[in-house]
Length: 318
Ligand SMILES: NC(=O)c1ccc[n+]([C@@H]2O[C@H](COP(=O)([O-])OP(=O)(O)OC[C@H]3O[C@@H](n4cnc5c(N)ncnc54)[C@H](OP(=O)(O)O)[C@@H]3O)[C@@H](O)[C@H]2O)c1
Image 1: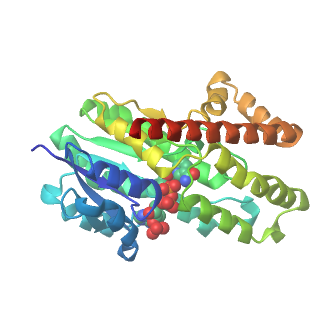
Image 2: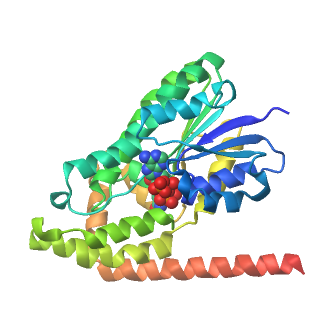
Image 3: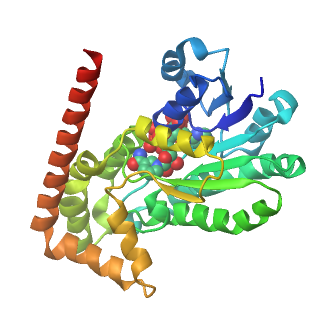
């Protein structure tokens, strides 16, 4: 059997966990999944979800993307160091006014989200080039193409990822390699909870009153509603990623959430870049009631589509 070796980072929760399990449970057993995490003490959730695939099409390994030695040790431990599909998923978020964040905190986001990917590629890319085969899949974000209020550093880290991959993609073509950026909108995972809780704890004393008020009474106030209205599940994103991996000619970019597409389209509509910035400004500061009503409407649509989906399922079952 010609199984592909898949290395995934950040599999202790969320998208990484869902994707590792989705690939390991592939009916045709096309993948041998090396599901990695930086802290093996957190392996229980993955073990439980993996079920019988554990030790068969899924193995759990340690890998901290912020540590070059850990990346190397993990790749060295694989049979013939072979990685056919690399899924760079590990990441962290950060929200808040930059006046209230330290440079060390910012560096940690860049180190995980951007240099984490670079460390992986430095280890895996040369072998892929030699073999002239491989697929590099990067879990980016819609914030890799469009900045969002109070996500300055996180968006910067994902822009870095996108610029890096776009540059590398040309070289990759020469070696018959594919690079794909998966761009989810909001996803309801540990990430969302951690980011929100950290946001609530921020010491806003270094920010002026207008900024502090904007962060607390506009951004944080709407945070949960945005995730409830737009949010996908990690399993949804895993399904999109699975499709990209199994395609013959995967595209370079793929957005997983069609509800978010109108926002990113604004960016491509105006080469001057003013359109998305002005639209976001108006949405947040001038039409906040319309914005809230739209979120409620989206929530209703999502609820109805979930309802009809489950009815459909029940009908099939009977
Ligand atoms: N959630 C969203 O709204 C959203 C939207 C767009 C894109 N994304 C992206 O999707 C990816 C996965 O996020 P998620 O939503 O699934 O969040 P999550 O449940 O918090 O998962 C993040 C994973 O990354 C791991 N990680 C963090 N630092 C690491 C390091 N130094 N080395 C190895 N692993 C590390 C975490 O491990 P620990 O458990 O040890 O912390 C965890 O397993 C991230 O790249 C994120 O930027 C998320």
